[in-house]
Image (cartoon, rainbow, N blue to C red; front, side, top):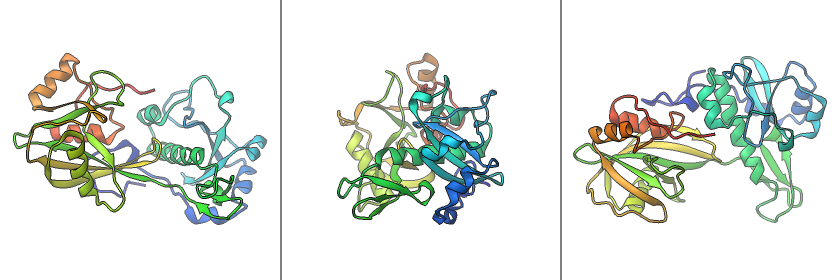
Amino acid sequence: MPATSQTPFDLILTRATHDRAGTSRRDEQLLPRLLADPATQVVDLWGDRVVLDAAGQRLAVRPPEAADAGRLAIYLGVAREIQVVAVVRDLDDAPGETHSLRSAGMQLGDDVDVSLVTTAVGIVNWHARQGFCPRCGAPTTVMEAGWVRRCTVDGSEDYPRTDAAVIMSVVDDDDRLLLAHGTRFRGGVGMSVLAGFVEPGESLEAAVEREVMEEVGVPVTDVRYLGNQPWPFPASLMVGFTARATATTLRTDPVEISAARWFSREEFAQALKDETLTVPARLSIARHLIEHWYGGPVSGLWKHS
């Protein structure tokens, strides 16, 4: 099934999707029935990591086993007309080689597999933080095939959340691109476009303007939407924009940004060639925003496990 969003980017995490079959989750016997059916495909997760097949290009799946009844199971939906369930395994039981979404997303040759892994990682990350009621602190139980947690005391229900974040390529009147090195970035020469979370009561465009001003002290205008992608690290939706700077003096926030600078295309290409600059991998919308400005593919990647 093709992605429905209109975007100039070939975003790996949005190329395709599977049928989530959301209304089926209400059936209390859905998971027991599927876990008793050998035709069901089970995706194992150890934390937020998965296993690929021997060729390293497909998601490893298996039929259900008896022990799955005692594990956290989440109904993912239907893929290739087959029911799929994710099962969370004990970390001590992990095989020798597992893959994060960052590495699996770059290796998987099947877009539906990428959709399954992205969904599974996102929902498992939510479960890892939702074992207790945020209202009273009581334990919660899993409902609706893994998509709801209910408080055992007050009966309140919590659902998976997605945090909206804006990410933006900022250019000046000379068509130079603004890149920054965040204080939490790994590696000394990695730089990316700016990004930040949307605050309550704020539009996406207003968040772009505020984040750029807060992080580097630059006012922007002409904020335009380009595309979006899920980013379950742990639970974000990255909404991509372009924006034009109306001033170029940089005043960085030292808490968030350790370095920032403007790049012409020539300076950008030379920095990549000299290995004094690296940019995010193609899994991220950040890379696509950079290439959209540059006008073509670039090299010089951060490395993720």
